[in-house]
Length: 384
Image 1: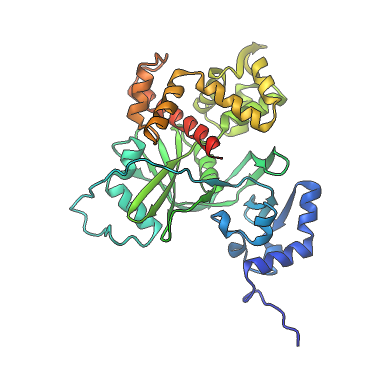
Image 2: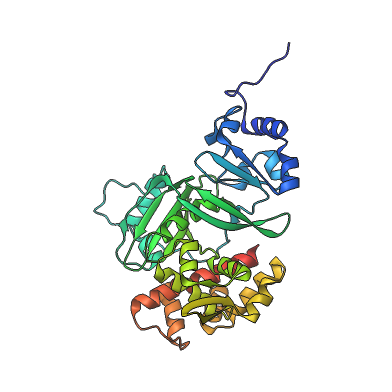
């Protein structure tokens, strides 16, 4: 007697095997680089919410892990499967643990019993951990929960072809565990409880999609933070995404004026100025006048670097960044101490590095956040 698995008894691995077979997914990926699949097609075998939630690489079904595949949501009901570099390995830290004393007047939080990500975030906030990490004295909890992404484009590394694959997102669903806004920044948090040890990695889009949404809506810097609670220890990791690299990719195709850049990224004018100034600071982009308007174009050095292979390009970006004293000394301090310097340490480095155009404490804080993000990016490349 033959038995047929129903959608209720079928697990993820079995359901994906059925889908790969029915739609010849692997052959399509081999031919076209990716495969787009709808929630309706997935639901034929199992609920999409169960079939597409892979927060860590270890959660992937065998067909995905063996073939180095990942899946990303691109609309409310569509997903793309490809050789995406969609997970980030958590950096190992040898930093000494800082003991924070929670306020004794808060009776509703039990630091010996943290059962959920939401409670972990509340405990970290109440104990001053988040404020200390961000370098912000006063923080206000703002947005959280599920929401739509709106529309944006980005590029992600294809691990098979070693090229950057374009992805278009249009009103996909995302979730923010918590957001805290202070005087100089907004921080977006993705939190995890690691009851059986520290996670090795996490799905990058959990931070990237919220970052893309909110960096287009506010003028303050948006800081993506991953928080892990395990064995009574809070570990916080701040990341910065490669918008400068992506801007150079666009300019490699065509010169762009200020309006082009603002429209492409859904930036505010201030954000456009920040990213174009960053590329000019590194010597990758030059600003010129054409028919009475400001136009940005790659410098000869920028074109040379953008013509390199992926690995050589990343190394050249690192070389350019570290040619500046503030970045070089911040990285050296992180190596000597075994952990990322605090914002105050980075500010002190900036002060004796002779940086120009830094007048206010708020500007110092913004620049310190930028330096921290770029140095974190360099150390992540070393880890990879």
